[in-house]
Image (cartoon, rainbow, N blue to C red):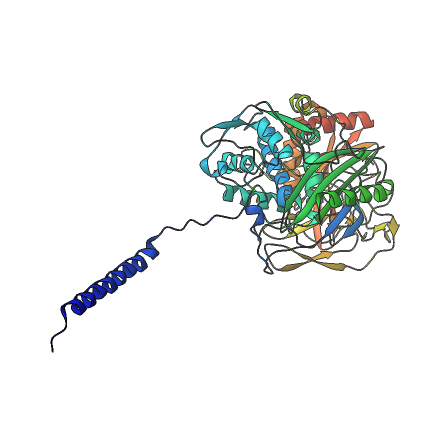
Length: 554
């Protein structure tokens, strides 16, 4: 059968057209997967999962920093995300570098590409440039600069992750038992957690340890390359007595604020976490200060301080147990007697303390211009307990007969903000204040969860007992710490005698044993000071050599 020429031509054209469309379609389909897709990364502060890994909610705590007593609290031990309040710990470690002399305020810090690429808020430092330590401090406090936080971390530890590990170790030394840090700036990470109680501990510690550098937290603005950068903390100048310290916000954390207030001899640290807005958070903080400042004790009762790394040790060495020194009220007239054996090194300044936990308690410091304060000579060097091994020398240990019954014992005080000293073998909780005389109590166990591990049981034991000094030890005495063994106490006495020289030439060195629950401690002391002023001069000499020291009357 023959197809007409016109029909055949039309059919052929249609076939060619269909074939062309098919080829083109196949070509587009084949090419489509090869197209490069660029996905915009969400801002870090918005990248918040809705899983159970995030710890949301409100919490607060108000602490009388003169005594360590908790005045008000709500969910104070619940895990929360610190957000930019993280930078207080970053600054703590930077202040350590300044105090040790490894860095100066004019030391240039190199900016890496990773640091420069951090999410806002940021200062905008460029990769390959430098920023001075002093500018970095002020940028962290005012702008809350995430890029600068990483600059600091990398210049201290080599990387942000290594620095975060150091932050967590230092947190444990300070008694922040539930805090875990994963970055130096507080950008969202579900594993970066803390509690209101832990942040209050940090707020007290940084003031006590670095009063000279803490003055930077009072600055309301910072000039950087001709631009004035205002502090995010709106309570500065709004609430009388507020001298810092740090705000923070992410979607996961809500609006956070760590605040310090000093007024009329009263000294309060307060933390609000999980606020719905900056304004409501600030209003809540103002209300908490107003409600609780009047309840705080007027005047300093005691101070606890974290030790510096021992001589020759790295600042990153967090395995050294923290030795605490405390300034306390006059000792009770009668002291119960010890039993059992030592576990870990520690320092105790209060002759008779029940082992509730205590936190580093800063002393009130007058407001000073930040730069002038930073350049001024340190007049309040924090006492330091050292775990460095030293050849022991013979000193006297005097034991006395056990009293027929304890006259004064110390009960567990509810609402004491505490510090735990952790070691490889265990820990000792040191009390934050001396309780009123009370009948001896049975041991109380309190569960505390550590963020990096499962729940642990921390026993609050019965009252500490001690061996009383002999009658000839009258007048004034000083204590440089309490330790886990007689040898350690003697070694520290030998070191103190070597460092203090003439200040201890006529002092009577001795040790005194005491027991906290099932743990024995040995106190290292010097007696024989006729006047309080003489004892304090000896203490001052020891503090200049990085010893913890307290003065008391026998």
